[in-house]
Image (cartoon, rainbow, N blue to C red):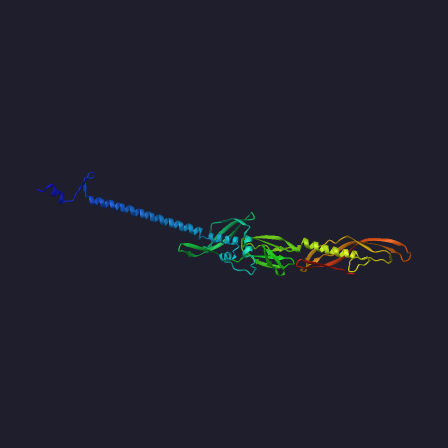
Length: 359
């Protein structure tokens, strides 16, 4: 008979399965446990991979919307306007170039136009035909609510996942300005040329543009206009130039000096003067003139020049005369109005008034 030790060496160890009444080899149990552990590890990796893919998809969607979406070029465009960076603004907008003066498409003229814009809100894109979209930007101009529509189109992919967008090219708006009897003006603080008193200026939108004219002798009240889109052409700006207070003072002073000189001449007909009187009798005393009221000066534009309206001076003459037939001496004191004209000549800040007297 075999001993117990021999029997133990003769075959594998077994363990009774008390629940099912079966006998399972210990190696099989270990392999089952190892397989279960591998399945759990694989499931964990698979779950992590799925979460990573989902996170990547979400990240791509967020980055695509916030940094590569059609709203982003609009935000960059508004920033370029505020910075006065015309090159960047035009590079983004890609407009067709009108035949117009570009004086305010960059620098101070552009940044001043955008300085009145505030509270910018860039809306979500709305689909248009052909894959294009419209993005509406809302903002305030000096407290007034305004909005501008921009149309954009996809132009390709960047880094395989991100869609790039560009503005659909369109012509720039133009602003027509005229100024009376001048060849320059200011537009948003920029001195611009006005040949024959007129010019047309290309402008970026949205923006507020203020035209004005002022120098020592003439000035025009500033006129502001807001350009918000291509759909509505901005109204023409007419600068109505008028004499400055300095010019009117200079003209009045020169006329008064001229008439005072006339009044100093002790004759009935002062030379080169509008004052005059006639007598058939002998003058037996000095002739005295006194200006009772000086002319009211009105200067207006006419035929491309500045003209002084006809003038009227009221003067009194007094003297004694002796009648030729009776020898009687009498006192004459007579006040009357005298009309004359004057030419206005200006050069820079210099003013010359040239009276014109017709006898």
